[in-house]
Image (spheres, rainbow, N blue to C red):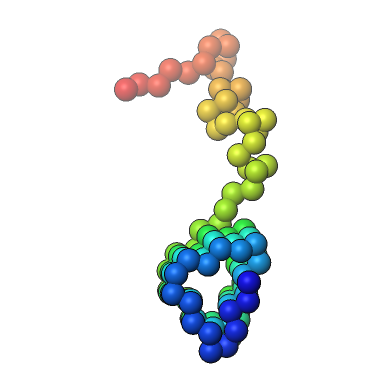
Length: 99
């Protein structure tokens, strides 16, 4: 989706590729989001990649989407990694934590 200079959108923008060179008031949900020099965006941007050109105005939050690989069930959780890498003392016992 391309928002041309002089164009104004009030509402949610959702597209895989979003290029803004006009005004958007509302959230943007996209894969690759580019804010060009004349962009004026007021709203949160949910993206895979975000490029903000010199002169662009952006007021809101930027939230990068996680890839499927990052949340894959085959990726060990931090808890499993911690358990697998527990340091043992000289006698082979895991140290106990005091509460």
